[in-house]
Length: 326
Image (cartoon, rainbow, N blue to C red; front, side, top):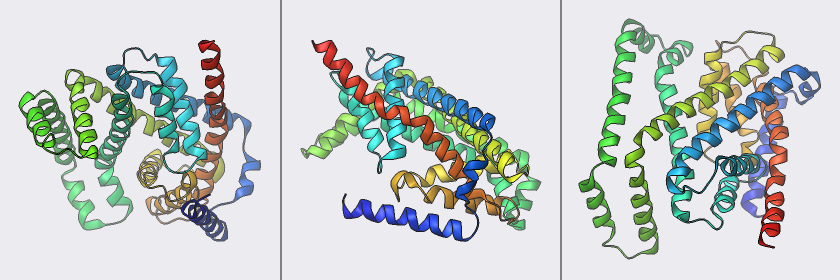
């Protein structure tokens, strides 16, 4: 194990220690879980995985028509599992290697994973934009909230109009041969290997010009995934905290935690996710301190149990490929 990974592990342990010390994380809460609740959350995890795999498959199918949904689901589940158990983006790297094996257009397949991540960020940005009035209200920033309160309909109209304008502009860019030629012409001047890879990536990105609706469907699916994740956290909160903390606060907290998870601070961002969720929920609920970190920890634990079989997907696939070669 490298020094970098050891440091990440230490960060996770330190954060968990402080969360337990300040009574926002109780590891023994696991033993109080209701079996019915666990089954509900597992079903929601299954929904998250299927929606995520389908979202990715829509992007993959443009790059390689040979890839089936089952293969995409299998690969997505593998990456889903490994991202919980390994460091950084190891799950994504192995997922790409797994599905791109013996396939054409490997760069396009790799780009689909990057685009999938970018679309996830866009969906979270949209949720935050629509949630800003609630965020400022819960943070008790009266000056800003009063502005939103007095102009709430104008604000939502403007945000919706802005999103439609960005989508329209993006479609125009993707369909513009002139813009594509200008970008590729500029990049072709450089012979550096990294620039050549970037040129290839940009060229592949423009293959989505005839499938711009596909991107819109992906954004809609990504938003649905965030809502399902928040619903899972909300159900756990109802059971564990015995208080009806509204779904909106769970959506906002969950989205911010997922944005933070882009930075690999600890293995699977253990401790970091719990600390961030706890802090955001604290401010979103009138600074009432409850065991918010326990809620996120339980959600993580159930996800890890659900993801565990995915660790064996790769080994079964190797055995299957060997059998096929014979």
